[in-house]
Structure formats: structure tokens, C-alpha cells
Amino acid sequence: MEPVIVVEDLVKRYGRVVALKGLSFKVYRGEIYGLLGPNGAGKTTTIRAVAGALKPTRGRVLVLGMDSWRMDFEVRKHIGIVPELPSLYNELTVRDNLYYIARIRGLSRNKAGERINTVAETLALKEFLDRRYGKLSKGLKRRADIAAAIIHDPEILLLDEPTSGVDPLRASSIRELVKKLARTGKTIILSSHYIDEAMNLSSRVLLLYKGTRVVEGEPSYLARILGLGKEVRIYTAEPLSNEQAGKIRELIESSGYASKIRVDREVIVAVTRETVGFLEEVLPRIKELGVKVRDLEILPPSWEMVFKGYIQPLEEGGCGPCPLAGTGV
Ligand SMILES: Nc1ncnc2c1ncn2[C@@H]1O[C@H](COP(=O)(O)OP(=O)(O)OP(=O)(O)O)[C@@H](O)[C@H]1O
Ligand SMILES: [Mg+2]
Image (cartoon, rainbow, N blue to C red; front, side):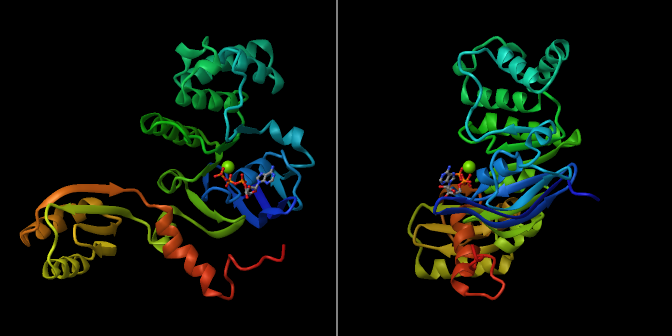
């Protein structure tokens, strides 16, 4: 299968800052390819380079076989981009913004009107078409940004943190929408600094750090090698005795549910990929030890987990083919 997007040895320097240090990856038709990385990893730089919006210092990006920098005008006909920051005109209504962009993308007046109705339907934006973009909530702005990106029905979508700053409910509706677009055959690159989001949405994920690929693969593979899981925190009503703490640790270890365990005086922490099983099987047994539970918290995978469990050891390990070793840039 021919890849839709090929990123080859991409280097981008901004003066002294080297934002990308020789990045390569391929994206195939119908994929949601997740670029996952903390702040400053190089996600936006990668997306802008794919869109042909910045000149690579070295290397190149091919979109449908075309060099995206040299043929940016042609390439953009096939790409819809949701930039990191809202980018439509605040003073214009959603409809006028969409119309303006549709016309720039070469749609006729009639076709533009038709597409506005179609995308408004897809994005549940109909009742907001005549509101000014600047007056919309963040969630609605994001939806309007996505509408603008797909107005010319491009086959490729580049979504730079589409749910950033959006409340959890709206964020989840945006995620559903991204899945829906992928089901219609679009090829999508999605950047995110939410580990859970990238893992749940993407067919493959590239973990990017300091402009370098750390690891790439299917979410299940990444979750395994990064030791990701949800963090279950059990707060006890009374401090645990040393004996209790020892027994709890043993019990959790032997259950096979947790990849990491920490038992402090008043909190039991376990990282697990099977939260339900853990809670159903292990929690009752903890209670049988006479432990009173005061509260319970389940936290998504954190960057701390990834840094401590994977990135830091790589950086410190001085390993031979270490992805984070100098790349000669
Ligand atoms: N125009 C610019 N001039 C100088 N440095 C830049 C510029 N744009 C980005 N950088 C730097 O390049 C590096 C990568 O930035 P980039 O915006 O691509 O990261 P990101 O992964 O998108 O981060 P975030 O999660 O904060 O959006 C950072 O160190 C950033 O400070
Ligand atoms: Mg960014």
C-alpha cells in the first residue's frame, strides 16, 4: 500500500532552536496517526511542515507523492488543517467564514453553499451558522475550525490539538467526530498532548520528544512498552500499619493486575490496564484486611509515568541505538 504522507529525515531549525531533529514516518490511507508529545516536542512544527507551511531545514515531506513545500498550493487542495489556535475571523459569522474559505479553496458559489449545509449538519453547527465566530464558546469554535478544515472535502486532515482547552464533554464529542471522519476514509494526523486521547483515537501513535521519535506503534504496543495504565488511588480512612501495608503490597502483586504499586501510610497507588478487574477483585480483598476506604480516584496515564518509566531511562542509559542520542544536527 502506498503511503499518503511520507516524512523523510525532517529537520527544522528556528535560529538556535532545533525543533525537529531528523524525523521520519509514513501515514497510510484511512489512518488516524497520532503525534503524541509534551509541550515543545515538535508536534505543531511537524503539522505545519506536512501542510507545506514551512520550509524544512533538511529533509522533505511528500503528500500524495508531491513535495509539500515546493508544491504547497497543489498539496493544500488535498489537505484540511485545524491549526493549534483558533484562526477564523472573529467579526464574521460562522457561515461567512466558511463561505470565504470555501471560495478560497476554489468552490463555486453554489457548491460553497451546499458544502456549508453539509458540514454544518455533520458538525451539529446548523443553529450557530449565523453567530459571530468571536462570540462562540471554545468548544463551538473548535467545531467551526473543523468545519472550515473539511469545507472542500479534503482527503487528508491535520488536526493540531483539536480538543485543547475544550471541556471534557465537548472534547469527547470532538473525538467522536474525528472517528466519524476517519470512517469516511479520510487520512488524519492528530496531534495531542493527552496520552489517553492519542491512545484511544489513533491507529498508530508516534511518541515525539525534543523533536525526535521516541517510539512508534499501535496504541496497544505503546501502552505495553511505556507501561501505561490508569492510576488507581485508594485513600484509606486511617493510616495503615506496616503489617497491613506489607500485606496489601503482596496481595496486589500476586493479583497480577498492577504494573506499578506504591503503598504509603494513607494511600495505595496501583497502575493497571484493567481498572474494572482490579476494583472488582482486589479492592474487596484489601477491605478484608480491615482497611477502611475513604476515597477512590482513577487517573489517566500521566507524562510523569512516561518520563519516569521510559524517557528518562533512555536519556540516562546511554544506549547504543538510543532514539534520544545526538542526531548530528
Ligand atoms: N517560530 C518559532 N521560532 C522559534 N522557536 C520556535 C518557533 N516555533 C516553535 N519553536 C520552538 O520549537 C520547538 C517545537 O515547537 P512546537 O510548537 O512544534 O512544539 P509542540 O509539540 O507543538 O508544543 P505545544 O504542545 O506547546 O504546542 C519548541 O522548542 C518551540 O519553542
Ligand atoms: Mg503545538
